Length: 392
Image (tube, rainbow, N blue to C red; front, side, top):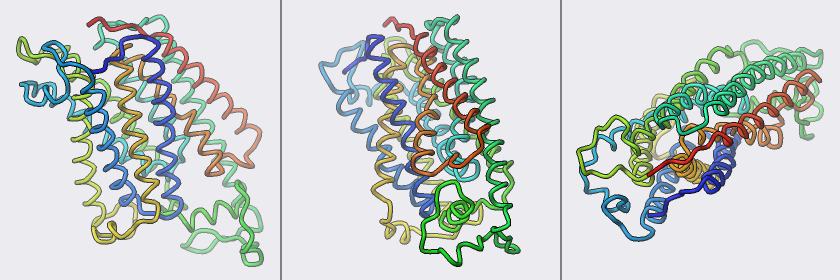
């Protein structure tokens, strides 16, 4: 079994995980904005997300010789370690609920704001729990100032959302945009220049986006999206502590002589429960969709190949990103590994590049956006600097 046992290796895992975990939400958002039903996308994503855990288990988890203290993945499957397995599966359940909720929140309040809110809740609650579960191996005088940086960043993120929403309302209130009763908005210019692609940040761009996307958001209360964000954040804050308990057995639930679950075995059980919950809920949503989405079916899902490759890629990125986060956390402390919650840095980059977020916004919005991203950069650096080293 391969073990990351150095601070440098742990930080390398965290940085790669940060890139992967910040990119996969952008892919799912892109598919929703192109009109693909989120139920179809999430079912595809779930398949490769589990496949990534299987690949990690049968590669890193099987490298080298197995011994009684550190058994390989296959050896652990037959051991009496069910208390730890249940912790791992509980972590997978809350992560699946969080990811599923975030998929809808991205549509209502945007990729950047959703990830800022959920990441900050995760850091404030989850990092604090992991610090104490890890027997305080991280340097508190560095760790908690990093947590404070995340809190400042979420405040700036809220201001960014408020300012950008005000900018968008101003664009839609211009004379060339007229309301259509009960059906949203339409631009007078669209009748005469429909062949021209709308520029990002314009009123026409916002209207065309609304007409294409799967989840319609015009006229919906922002409170819906924010409520979903906070629910997702609570779920995200619990999965890492549950994983920590599964791998390190701080509550001494295993019988004497039973080795702790390796990070790879834990991740396998974690991903299996994540997969099961996602399949059950999304098949239910095919026939009983939320937020006035159209009904679908298993047959329709199987025949929907538009964007399936992208959804598969998102699942792989998320699966390998989570695996790398846990590998780094097992070496340097799960509190320090929560530095990957700076993923809004990556998500905001993709939001600006792919989705035209913040294009043609006010100077105030740009200043707040730069401040938010700068604070996240400081936060991720501080959390990584707090890394300790676990003693086996």
